[in-house]
Image (cartoon, rainbow, N blue to C red):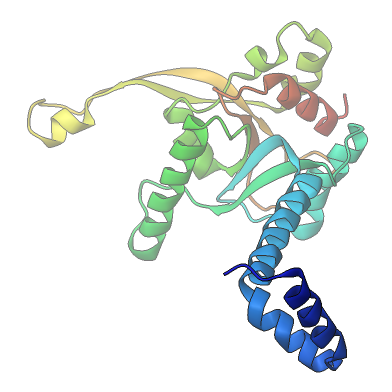
Length: 243
């Protein structure tokens, strides 16, 4: 039903005569769904704007395997490096995967942790969201055997000065080429045979000033073989080793 101009004017006059509380009640009664919808839109829009303004761009991804890292060491390995590299830590992110555990002999809760860590490892490498690994000897053996690590000489490329600086810390390990374990367990092979080759694919970091005295066992740094950011990894390694 269409109201006349006189009726609309009368309604406006009556509304002006209402108390503030009655006016608010009137507005809410007739326009509450518009108000609710408007508030929802503002909240969603505000959230989107906040995410855009505070979003950090990943620079490098690092995982800690079988190694516990203190908060201060973590800061030096990540935020402090970003600052030295001239990057803004508020806009650039050093993504970390903490508390991962790798072992072939684990049992019970440790076995479940190892399985979950292997799933995380496979997913992050398939998505190409893993560049660097800090690891114990046990984890190093696991990752090297499965071909996850990039040879250090390949990382250095033509940078002879960097290679010379790294050479005292370069470590050699085994990389499996063929393994008939499944066939052997199924009875399809008489012997368990493994074909492997050696590769220089990690750096011992215990003697670096940053790590001196922190660990009683060897700790290694490696670069993931399929990292799409080998240039950034090379710059990181060069910085860590004082190049």
